[in-house]
Length: 414
Image (cartoon, rainbow, N blue to C red):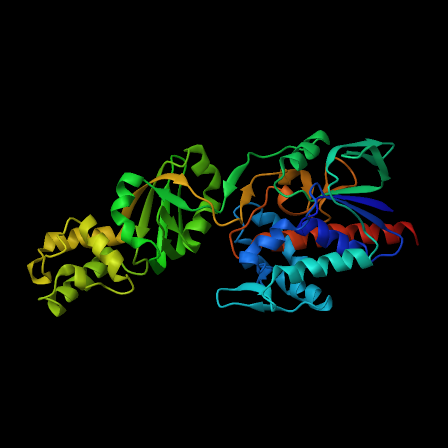
């Protein structure tokens, strides 16, 4: 059996490493650039966020805005525990950080890259770097490729598309009969109207541990909870990144013009927040309102929220009227800011959209349209939130495709 793998990223290398362990199967890995595994190299600030220590398939699948239903069965077969064991067998130990993200104990993405490259080399995989694939077609049930240096490469018994978010990968899928769902950026930061945000210049670097962030679009209102980070241009942090993933298509449709709401006390009602402010008024009656923050809001942010509520910073707590306290409480529960654009989250870009999931058999990752064509990783309309989930999708779908082909080969040769 000869198998062509298109794409030298996480999914392509993991598939090749897994399948090349089977004698009698020849794997050729085509990568369009001279440096494969680029996304692995830059992930986690160069440490590589391999996976997440979430071991329940149902709970794990909820971290994927698209592909959630399909991935439940995938994770029932290969999930983070299996990823940890797979890399451990290859000599790479992973460790979990308090937030659940898992990295190699060396804290270097080079460890993962070296592991995958070593496995494919030992497995006899033919690695064809700088060999982009421009066309795929079938003749008598076998695949042929047109690449950068060859007009007719093959024949291959099976082809695996593991091209990530590359437009060329989507074009190849379309040429073989597949549909591509609309593409949109995912995992991005929120830019707030500059004419408003410039007055908050002192807030860059301020973080709040638990904020409910919501965004309203004409189609739907989305919300997510988690840590919030204030930046020079607007909002970032896990809560915003999660929200950007779940609202990716709807925000793109608005050209990133929407209203963002921040609830700094998601566990409390507006009445409870008002009661806290009334207690602060009694306890710190002689202090300026700016110097009496309610935890966990940092002092710098507290002062900005106070001014946004229309309360002068030099006003003493004892002088605050009930109506002022009510306005302040309402703002703490819903500070509305105009979203005017999106930023990027480091280099860890993710694309929402890809090959339509209805056209894939997730028991094998095989196309329902073109036999012996397989898919793995982000080329599909599957994307996860930040935290190692996108790599886990790559490992799991690649493993299932490799195992299916291995079993098919054994079945046909026994």
